[in-house]
Length: 150
Image (cartoon, rainbow, N blue to C red):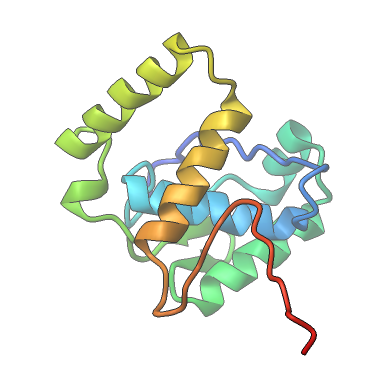
């Protein structure tokens, strides 16, 4: 059996985000699966490699990999590593899709207009919330609820 390709996934851990490091690894792996960066058969980096590159405890990475395994996305193979079992990607989510091209073009316009990364992230988060609101009236931004007190 041929060993899968080791994909250079570099986890970026933001210690100020309030999101636990293992959860950031899970989220970033899922993002790579959605974008087609990781495909079935690829081997994830070892916990030791992640520890060296991202300065996280190897147990943090192992915890993330166990979570991904519980979700059926990866499988450990003793003595070989952890391998991708299935993808989350669809043709529309690949970096070669027209939608991705439109998004990159929009990002370029936003940067040209002087928006910072945080500004763009806030706009995207607001648009996501509005587009995918689940039957409730999800409103982003500063809102005030007033009571008449009567």
